[in-house]
Image 1 (cartoon, rainbow, N blue to C red):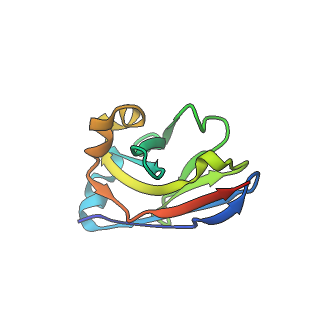
Image 2 (image 1 turned 45 degrees about the vertical axis):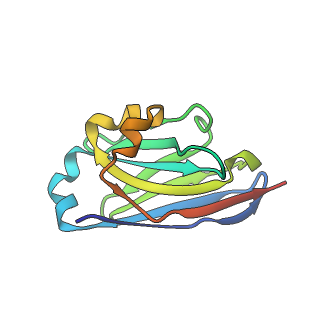
Length: 134
């Protein structure tokens, strides 16, 4: 079983920055680590969950949703088994619950725009709330 634990969310003013972290562990995950996709997803109140950024673990190739491209950065520290999301220049529309997830590599890019691929990621964290005020 794989476990994902997010942290780093909180209240912030528009223009501010946050760094989300996702610690991942579990024997099952480590077996397939090289061929997984990990990502950040978010869900605002009353809205469907959407993709934010994903990273293909075999090559560390990254993909971003258009709404955060050139603003957010996804990365991971292999030694610490931790996934990060750097979020500078935050906007009120970034307010949401942010989730870390891990899934099959074949779903990686399409998870950003396709609900089926996104919601079929194998493992999800409990989420961390980000609230951006004006």
